[in-house]
Image (cartoon, rainbow, N blue to C red; front, side, top):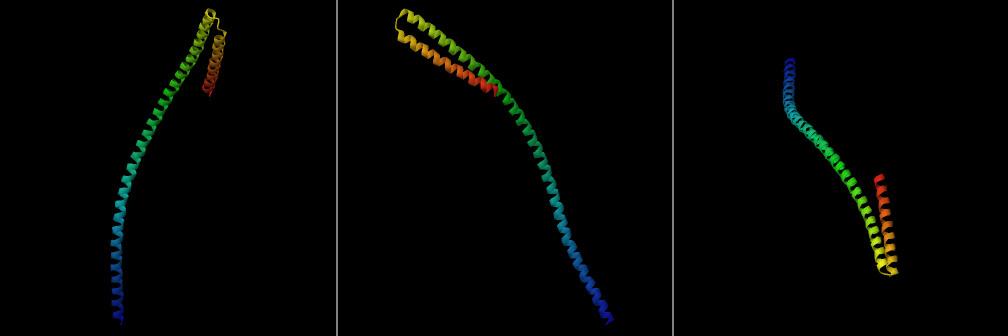
Length: 142
């Protein structure tokens, strides 16, 4: 019986060794797959790093373009305000010329009603121009 127990123990050790070898083969395959995934992951990380650098460059370019656009827009706004102010001055000057012409016409024709109409139009236009200038001055201050 002692011999049978020795054979039985050796058989059991042999089965356990075969199971261990099988488990090692399975573990080796999983490690190979993990290493392959690691290489893919490294490649993906490298691509993401490159994409991030490109995005940073693009953002810098957009910021520069936005700054240039803002400067151009501010210049045009300033120019437009100046032209608007000049136009308002020309309108007032034109109203003065019209009033003088109306006065000359009034001297030539004794119709008093036309004179009153010209004066009221001049006051309305001057009021509009003054309010326009005040509003623009407020916009420039803001």
